[in-house]
Structures are given as C-alpha cells and as structure tokens.
Image (spheres, chains in turn brown, green):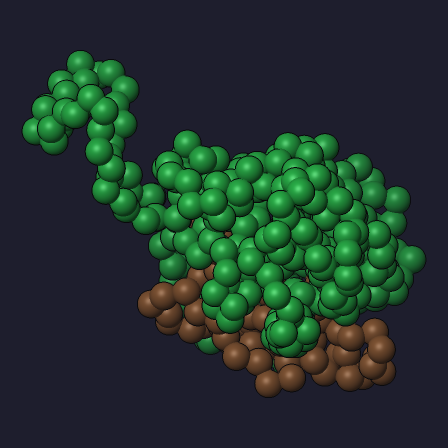
Length: 79
Length: 351
C-alpha cells in the first residue's frame, strides 16, 4: 500500500514494527514502532508514558516527511 | 542416523494463537506438531531430536534476544540439518523462519531448509540466504510442503546430484552454476534461437533473468514550512474501524478498505473504534485505538502548528493474509482518492 501511495506522488512515511518487511516491500521512509499489537504505546505503562512515546515517534515520522532522502531510510527514534 | 531440528511458531507448537504470540523461545526434546510429519517423511535414517517453539511476536519484536536464546540452547547439541516452518502465507512466521535459519546456518554451518508461499514477504527477504521451498497458502498444504522439504533434505545429505531451483521446487537464490546441456547446443545457436523467437513474437526464456527492481521513486521531501500549512492523512493496515465494522472489512485476507470521518475527533476512544484485525491480539488496540492510529499525537502537532491539520478521513484495511496484489490494488484506490483531494502527506501505520 505504501508503494502505491508513493507511486501516486504522495510523500509517505510508514510506521512499522517489522522494518525488514517494510524495506522488502519497498517503503522509502520508515519509522520503527514498538510492537505488533500495540505499535505506539505499551499498555503496561501509564497513559502519559504511552502518549509521550507516541508523540515522539509521530514527530519523527513528520520530520521524515520533510527529510530529503536519496535511498530507503529508517529514521531513528529516541524513545 | 542423521539428526534434524525443526523450528515452529506458537500456533503450530500447540501453545496457542495470537494471545500467545509473545511466547518466549523454548527448545523441546522430541516431536511437536509438524515435527511428527517431518519425522515421518524423513524416514528411519533420520531422527528429529528437538522442536523449537517461539511466538511470532517475540521473534518479531525481540529478535536479537530470541535468536540468542535459541542459538545458545542449540550449542552442544548434535544435528546435521535444520528446518523451519512451513510458514505458508503468514508474514511474521516467514520472517521468523528466515531469521532463525540464517542465524543457525551462520553459527553451526549446517544446511537450513524452510518453506513459504510466494506471497510471503519472507521469500524476498531470505531467498538468497537459504533454500525456501515453494509452499501453499495455508496449513491445508502442510503435508505436501513438509514432504518437499524432506525429499530435498535427503538428496542434499546423500550428496545426490541437485538440479536447478525451479526443478527442485525452491525459490531461486540467484546463484549461477555451470550445467551441461543434453543434447549440447552451443551458446551462439541458443541466442539466435531466442532472437528469432523474439522477432516472431513467440515466448522465449532468457538464460539470465534479471529481477525487476521493486523500488518506487522516492517522493519529494515536504519543507517544514509547507508541512505547517497542509493536512496530513492517516492510513492503516491495522484494522481500526468504528465499532460494528460498518463496511464489513474482512478480518483476514481483506479485499475491502474503509474511510472514517475524524474531522470532529481529537482522539480515538474505546467503545467508538476497535480493531477487527485477526492477525494480532486486539486487547491493546481496542482499549486505546490511538496506539495503532495515532490521532491524539497528530492533533497535538496540529495545535503546535507543525502541521496544517489532519485530513478529515482516515483510511483502514486489514493487512494479514492479504495478498500483495490486493494490497496494491487497495493502495491504488486509496491513493486516487487522496490525490483527488490534494493530499500530499501520509503517515501509514502497520501492525
């Protein structure tokens, strides 16, 4: 899906847990998430902690949209 | 007597389904699930000594730890060949089989064999590293897929002559090997035959197939200034839909997608949205759908002015068992809508 949306000329970032799979299917901008059932917030942590992590990673994704890249890129996250 | 070890996931290891996908790796003596069939197909000269069971999510999210644990428990065990799967069309399972086979091959230098369906992303990820047999789409082909792995394993171990990937039934590894044709036809004749067929518009088979590049041209970067003025759209393959699933999107092997109005919402809350994805434990996503579709975080960036806004709809489908062809079609349909509405930026979340 990411490929087809990007083919249409839309700048897209994929947030995924299995980054090697995202790479193989041809995503160009990728941001890692923390797991498969809860990509952006671990339910065993308090709500504020979950939001902080989600806010951070979505921020990385937005910055990825503004990044001028030359090849498939996995953007680094801090939390 | 030759010794073999088989890796399988928590489902085929009879531990449980999605709710047990975080199951930590375990090396069990003897035969579990598909190992019974493998033992039968390998016959009396082989003994499948151990079955390794590991949850697909554990291998997906804590890969290094999983591999380390498995490799260290294999140390000191005597085995001649290693199998994984078959993984059929299950993407996470294919990923797991590929990763463990690769690690075992590197560390113990034994042949490794697995099996996946051509739609499994694991095929493209690992075909260059190992023998991946062409398997069926679902567990219905278990017996056939195990038989193919076992048949080839015996040939390999007996030192019999091996034929091309296509003839043996595995995905080509991109290795070239010298063969003698029978009857011999020299290269000049073969190439002229091909050329004549091409001119006549007939089918011909290249001896040097070049796989098409799958990369899409990189879409241009959006300047931070422009980003602060445009709307960003959310798309997910995580199956988040309004409670009740109004578009009846399938929980697996989806062929439908939906779009849902979020223009008045700040947050996706429990009881209004839920996941219908059958490929992961829904508990966390149902309790807070923002963990899959991060609307609350995106709204925060809207308030801060980092983005111009959030596009009025989010788009959703289910990405488990979904063929790449269907996913591509749905992607094209969603892209056409977004383009028509002037959307230039998308965050896609996958599970």
